[in-house]
Image 1: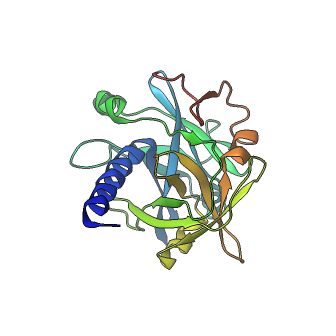
Image 2 (image 1 turned 180 degrees about the vertical axis):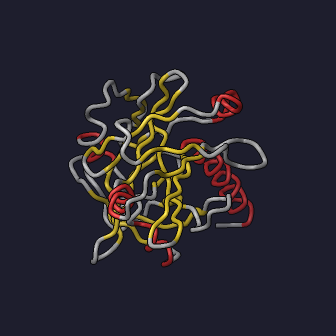
Image 3 (image 1 turned 90 degrees about the vertical axis):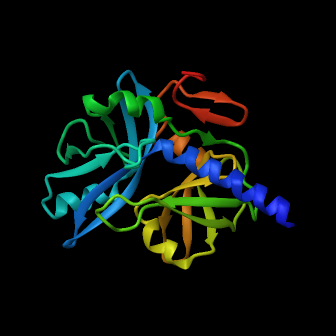
Length: 238
């Protein structure tokens, strides 16, 4: 890759990264006398509220450790990067467990609703096959309570996928990415679409594929809109 094309690639990737963060909330919870920050996917807008999808492991740990709530912050275009803290009760009927994930509706604080509605955009899901060596990025947060920029760790596909595969094999340039995998970090391609949600096994790093998500956790969230090889839960242009 020459200097010109390399710079163009970096600029294009930076633009995609900024676009991707519009669909990801920060979820903060206490665990083992520490704090963990994980990603929650904004998958659909319903009027003034948003549907959030996240890995269910943290909810199990919160209940086991008798924690009563967790805290969520929406992404914004402001200098602070994220909006005000919104407390969600662990045992709220609004928090539902579906196929190992949790889903809940969240409404921004009234004082910043206009800013968030103008910035947030639900994620889109890639339905095309993902060839081996496809460049991908995983989105995750440092384990700090203070608001910091997210980390985007570059990697590539180890295993190719076909429409019926439930998992993807991933190799990352930064081995420290592994410790965040169990918390469901979202995985994006360089078109800015979600291609999987990460989890860890003893063997190596994997991600639940979009076909798997479509047939499980997203199956009850009809209608699903398909266009140009991607799926989304809001009508195109909404």
